[in-house]
Image (tube, rainbow, N blue to C red; front, top):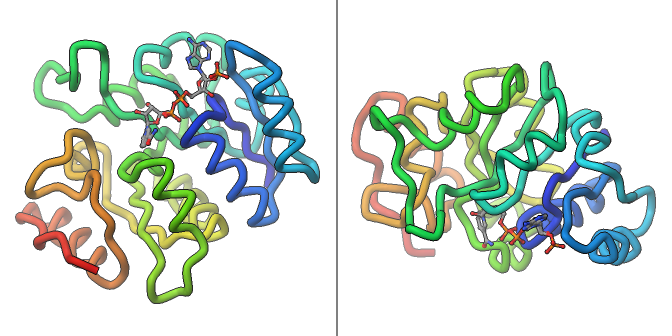
Length: 220
Ligand SMILES: NC(=O)c1ccc[n+]([C@@H]2O[C@H](COP(=O)([O-])OP(=O)(O)OC[C@H]3O[C@@H](n4cnc5c(N)ncnc54)[C@H](OP(=O)(O)O)[C@@H]3O)[C@@H](O)[C@H]2O)c1
């Protein structure tokens, strides 16, 4: 599969490395200094290449991984996302702190609405980039969970396969309306900012599905 990355920085850069190690092609885009993308493509090697955000959006899957204030610009430069499977890694931090949404919706709902026509998923957003890099590819029983939410089941299944290929354990946290537990800020009663592994994470998904409080964060 070819995966476009819009914002190949801390999170997108690590994901690109991991996808490439998992056997996928990557197209790196969106930088203030194209030399940064060239350098990353060289480092990854193989079929990794640099492209425009529109080229990244033309791949089988596109990851949007830019700072919150840059999302509208990234979407504009991507062009049409109609029918495109998107992985959104962003968290709603602006210069004023954590952004809240009218009506109490989730950041994922807000972003899905502005990525018109996209087959939207959200993932790779709950753990620091350093930890994601360091914890990738552990033996199966210790694998770190990357949560996924989305309202398009097929898109979510495809993204879960990519997460597994990237060296993590994928867990479906449900739809966009109920995914607040995987969104910023770090707080009691949420999975954001915490390490989870299987099978504990499956109990979280079940609690979210049933509208119950999630289990306490395990200590590994
Ligand atoms: N960092 C984390 O630990 C972490 C963890 C979970 C989720 N997230 C979320 O994931 C998203 C990406 O985070 P990140 O830390 O990976 O971001 P980042 O490295 O600061 O930025 C991502 C990429 O966007 C490009 N970029 C930044 N500002 C730009 C601008 N004004 N114009 C054009 N390109 C620009 C940068 O390229 P150049 O620097 O080459 O210009 C960079 O490679 C954010 O929404 C963040 O909240 C981050």
